[in-house]
Picture 1 (cartoon, rainbow, N blue to C red):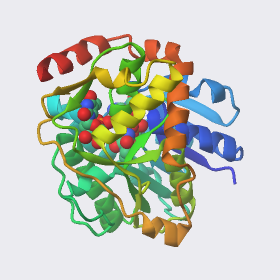
Picture 2 (cartoon, rainbow, N blue to C red):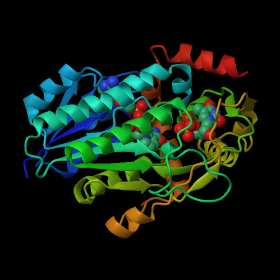
Picture 3 (cartoon, rainbow, N blue to C red):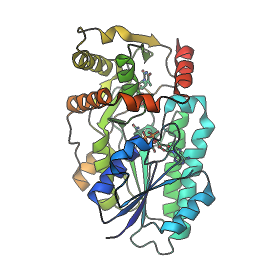
Length: 351
Ligand code: NAD
Ligand code: TYD
């Protein structure tokens, strides 16, 4: 009762769904959303809950240790759910240092602030939200389990793997009560249109090329973002200290098959001739070091905490498409700024 919880990165894609879920489900908690509002953070994502009495927004940079410590002093947080990060693999290839600062240094600053302010660790919890990409890349067979050895291969996954190790180190060395989850690829409303699905939805709407990296044979395991938020809620409240939980949708798709499914849904929704969107598919130079396949074994989370995804993939994908079609203004707003320049450079380089 009456707890104050810090959620970092709450203005981003997944963070905004987690903030909404906590603000609505737990009116007895005070939820403090800490976000730097980078290109990926957008307060429009939280318009519907911004005036709730148990919601507070603080603009701050987790790389700035002093700023973070002042906030811990101000609010005496009972728990932290840490999502703030640089999250896009292509950007990590173009600019790795940003990822080291935000994902590694930023996480250590939060760990230090929690350690310093939690004289009594009883009832406290530091929840670090991470990715399945820390486990590396799979061949045609097998699944990542919580015991799979770390083998990160992109600057993004290396920075997230590093932050996971620091979180475990603060648990082992300083007794900080932590929990970690590693989740597969998320999709859904409010995802910035640089990741595969929202980028392709936006390009289909605006009739631009769909840049498929390599042959489109890479495989990803897709999970609806609200199912990830539900898992985070469960793990935050019921996960065991020091444990790791994998989260995934048992929903593997080869990129090209997924893109073709998306194209057919978009043709229907936009009342275009069947096959119209597929004509936009353009094969471009592959991503450097492109991981072949990710797939999660989420049986620990299912067995121990009873979590299963709530939504069938086709249903989730239709919901997502409907959301982007109904929120063209959101797309325009988030892609103003330097997005057009970034996207042009990415696309030109791959041609
Ligand atoms: P996102 O890029 O949409 O949002 C990241 C948020 O963090 C933004 O609001 C941004 O402003 C904020 N942020 C970035 N740097 C910051 C800083 N220095 N200080 C304060 N705030 C900062 O990311 P997302 O896709 O919502 O991912 C959220 C978390 O979940 C990340 O930690 C990511 O590694 C992890 N994750 C993502 C996926 C996925 O498919 N997107 C899957 C598994 C895990
Ligand atoms: P992405 O959404 O960037 O997530 P991640 O790399 O973290 O899995 O990419 C998902 C897959 O789609 C990945 O195999 C790369 C591929 N992809 C493209 O083929 N074209 C694109 O324009 C993008 C952004 C991704």
